[in-house]
Amino acid sequence: MKIYHNPRCSKSRQSLALIRDAGHDVEIIEYLKTPPSPEDLTAIIGKLNITAEQLVRKKESLYKELGLEQQSLSEEQWVNILCENPKLIERPIVIKDDLAVIGRPPELIQPLL
Image: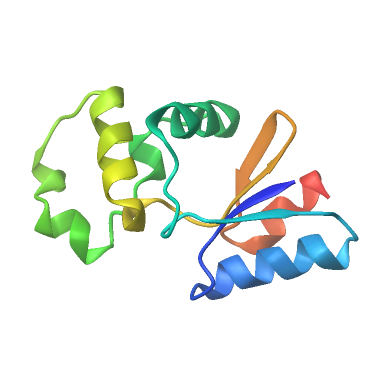
């Protein structure tokens, strides 16, 4: 399993604890320190079965600072913005094989355990 993790986020910490409590080995990726590449993020979005825009934290102040609420962007443009500004990526993302979920709330990761 993999978790795209922000240690400062309570939901991310709770999701990580659920994975560990279930006895799974987990690769922890602190995406703020090591943002995904556009190719990796596109693959993650495909596993989540959502659009890149649906992965955006729209309540984040950076979203407004960049003026993104007033823009109509392509999927590729959203992916690039997320990779350049990983703070905007919804978290945590938990991946197991070809499945992925956003752990908000953390209970949503249960099907992967």
